[in-house]
Image: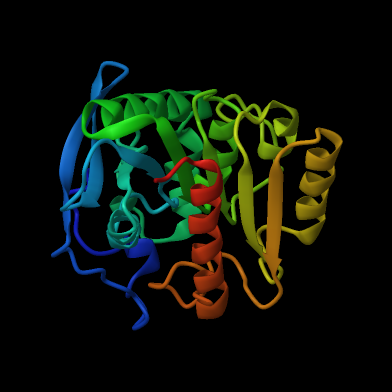
Amino acid sequence: MATTRQSGFAPAVSPPAATAVHTPDNEIIAGITSIPSQGDDMPAYHARPKHSEGPLPVVIVVQEIFGVHEHIRDICRRLALEGYLAVAPELYFREGDPNDFADISTLLSGLVAKVPDSQVLADLDHVASWASRNGGDAHRLMITGFCWGGRITWLYAAHNPQLKAAVAWYGKLVGDKTLNSPRHPVDIATDLNAPVLGLYGAQDTSISQESVETMRQALRAANAKAEIVVYPDAGHAFNADYRPSYHEESANDGWQRMLAWFAQYGGKK
């Protein structure tokens, strides 16, 4: 069973690059919790500012395929410094542990493909509920996700009518329909409940520019409140500062765009 008690990075992406960022936690409160969800106790990492008044705006942080490792935890800490309650649930905990896989291809086939979208979306609902009971403002609920989590972010924006804003980082937009993944972001463009910002890299070999344009057309046809930004020099996982794919200029711009998106649509005080 996967837990957020693991340290460092997943073996499939080790060793970490020298650019890996560690955000100091002296101004925040961070740790591990257990969130009741669908009859199970789901591990999650959470972070919040140490000094705050009243309920905090909430950002659910959805993991990459590698689980809630150090980079995802650091994303939570960065958001806490911006005044958010950030929560990253371990969404593979029932099916297995990303640390048991030494390469990406077997991780995808042996674990990721076994996780049903419907289960994930229900788990995220329980995360939102937990946040509202633990210092979060249910009326200021946002979500962001990376890679696998970017795709889930699009889906969750069509799932939860209480969501205020979403930012999807290089999440897959089209794909084969399976029992566990019956719909993809391009299929739910007409169903978005919240404004979505999509951040993509033109050099991404796993997400074609054709699929990005297909998504843009679907969003325009739906008159959806959404925007897709493509960084010309960035590839996949350009925000992953612990990997060689990191593209600092694009990552920094994307981070500022995300914060502005949350401030505009999420009701952050």
